[in-house]
Image (cartoon, rainbow, N blue to C red; front, side, top):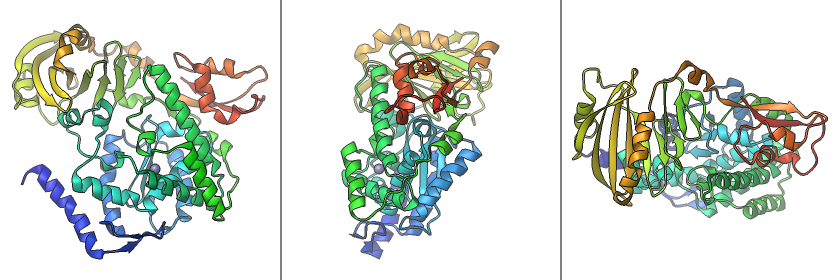
Length: 490
Ligand code: ZN
């Protein structure tokens, strides 16, 4: 049995079993569902199985015991007011700077560090968690999971980022059901449930609306800076397609059904807990500085060409450039002992043994042994030329794959060569300077203005807009001396 077939087969057996159970009542919505649902214990089993994979593909847990306790306390409070108060929920903070939140069947809920750095009170975070709890209790996660797996249809992180399923297959990533977007109906249902749980737990449901506005603002600001359209391929906005209007509708509807909104925003508690949290890249995963990628722990750096945007994944670094050009950087399988294997042999016999290549050719890059070869592959968007480069760093073998549509390959030739030769070990000074940015909470002084406070932010441009974004609750009035605000510090 082929690997794919076995995978589909084993997953298909779950919904098939569930079908025997027939019609079931949805605990949160009260609807009679005749979907190929799984039982609660099957949902929990899937959550347990997928949890370690999620951690692996989303940079792992953000190790801050107090923050994890806090998020679990807020999440469990909301869950205790849901239709599944007996279900054991698991809330995880991912060490990921992309603004994201999602849920797996069985009560596994994830929220990213990037999302927490954008929020500014407990009610905003509660709104996100309650919405995800709603997807679990209304069993959207389970429905989506069975559908995605049964048809083997799903978006991979990488595919979403580079815009090509084929590239993600080359890089070896599979279907990820939780990255698909929910339907409009499911989103409205999750919002209505979220307002219900928030009201019961004493939170102001306005947190949901204000955080959504923030997301819209952030998206706008980011695309202004990147000079791109506001289309986001990956993150909260793409998996949870919502609008301000619909969120406000959900709040009104819940109130008309007798949900009495609480008033709790929890701003001070929240600011205390995020004080000192890492903002942006964690040096443990490597740091992006403009076009440079620096990894202080693994002791290397490289620079991508102008107009290439770096994306730091868990097992790959990706850079997407103009004309569908893509650079994938990663490490050779650490289980291979390559000490006595020339890099030319590594490319030919280990990396791409089934690919017809031109070369390989031996190179030397900053004193390191290296090799390169070229090939042509078929991708979704048509043919791609691939230049492969393998480098023997003192600690591991690293590799670049440069992909371009054939008609632009020669255009990028020189730039890709520059990127290859920019790969180097770090000087002590470079290693020391690779420190993370952190969220800082400060008290506004007598002479401070948004302008003066924003000047310290480590952004290249639009500092005032960034300051207002992370401190949105203050923007409706003037800053008062003694107010607490978020800044970003070294
Ligand atoms: Zn949603």
